[in-house]
Length: 517
Image (cartoon, rainbow, N blue to C red; front, side, top):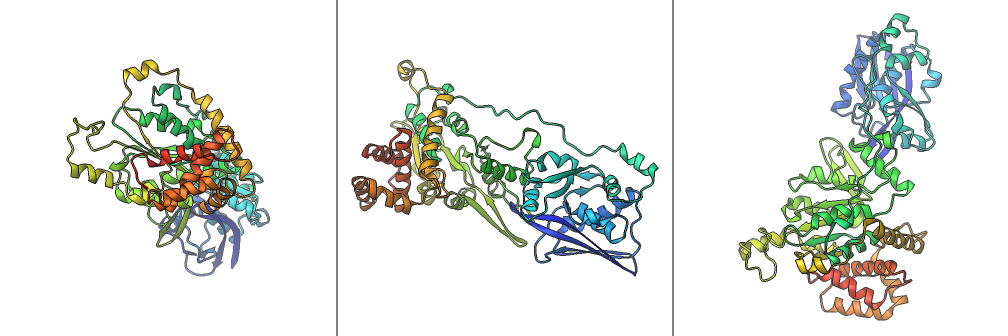
């Protein structure tokens, strides 16, 4: 009878939980049992582990094998437990020395030939292991660069179970070791250094008011809604917003990279993601693809992949109402909580939402609307697809009209992205200084109660004006808070210590376009 123990990590959302993998051998008919709340893909590890051990030149124990994943009430999913199960089984059978193996965390999927395949979510899994006091981590060789991005981690990259078992003292015939030495570890083609293409604002001709609204949105982290006929530059403006945003801080970069690691969209060749991400799903996207989902424990969708960046919904009224309404939670809380039968996953989703829409289904309801072919009912249905509660969560609303030839001829040379981004960085720095120690970094994150109290102290006349708008029913309480946030951002851009009545007036104007709330 033998007992082997080692460690692995279970991921639920981005939260990693250390899992002790225990293997128990006892006399009896050969049997391989796996307990501890595994899902279907993890249950299949029994066949992968048995074949991988045999392919590595080691005999699988001819006895009753029971593997327990502790804590047993924690859901476990995926093939990343294969390597830990194999190591624990070899420990129980006395095939390897357990002094070192027991202290290490093992992550990786096994092939039938013994190769160790890469898995998703290595970055948050290794970070969880280090935080739990297990800095020594064995990962697939193809994931080693990603694992080394975690501060404090001591990473061992392994390509084949046979090589790892030999390092742990296994007696493997030399001929078998030579045979498996030529088997390459699975590795994707190396990606070129990540150099994001920054689309420049100089490409946007005219649209002075829209450019101003875009700058304000970037400076304060505000949500943005643009309405205008086709061809006016709404998509161009949205695509240039990420270039105005400052680089992510170290903690933000680690958080964003962890999301993309779990989603399987991260390539460690360029290091941590330091630029704000940009996600622009097509209007046919399903709720699961946008907010996350899937069978078993859910995976992050576009909204989480846009964390600390921009989520752009072009032709927003064409999106499913279910997709649009599920965005209300992250717009308020900065995270997505997805419930499934096997557990609850939480993904960060503090993004800037940018919506673009035509004024009507045909897009020609501009001016007097003489060219519009839509019925009044069709226009109402089109506008109603963006519900009142969703619109109320948008800070800035812009009309993006057609640019005339006279405007083009009279317009000065447009400012470049670099010039506007410098002003945005200055405004962001002022916000960080003012909000130091609060846990908030941008005006868009500040709770309304804090803003209202501070505004009443520094500008009672401003508070009175907003109260009047609230009494007239032109603003909801949520709308009042969002006007205050934009007003503080306007003050930051102008390098003022507090908003003025002019800032509040401009914030109201940006809020009231096409709306009465």
